[in-house]
Amino acid sequence: MHERFRRGIDMGLRETIDYDIKSALKSGAKDRLSALRMLSAALKNKQIDKRRPLTEEEIVDTVRSLIKQRRDSIEMFAKGGRQDLVDKETAEVGVLEAYLPQQLSPEELQAMVRDAVAQAGAQGAKDMGKVMKALIPMVGGVRTAS
Image (cartoon, rainbow, N blue to C red):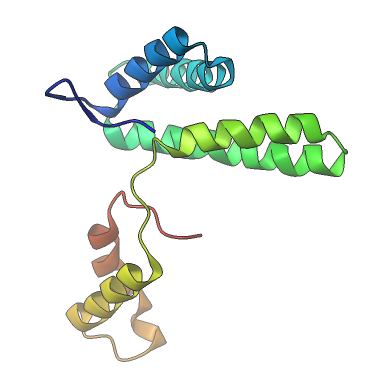
């Protein structure tokens, strides 16, 4: 899909999205362009609400929110028998997912959980809070398989 490193410049997520909009315009990819414009508009609205530039984390949160909305729509359209809209929303989810952090494999996540348990010195389920406190910084912005 896209690369965060283009033409020798390390671009932030917002710059990557803007670059991909231009690329979609040039290539005539209408569906991709539509999804990217929708994402850009959502980011612009959030930036106006915050009255400051968005952080990378806020951009990722916005992308996750839009994906969740699309998945809810897919479910509703499927129940309503609107396969054309299901296909459109599914394609948009595919475009948006490219802007999420790389997903952890189950093995990587298990290794992180084992490290967090050892780090927290957890003895049982009652220590779950300690484990989560240690695990969340390790996982950071990386997606987990869900």
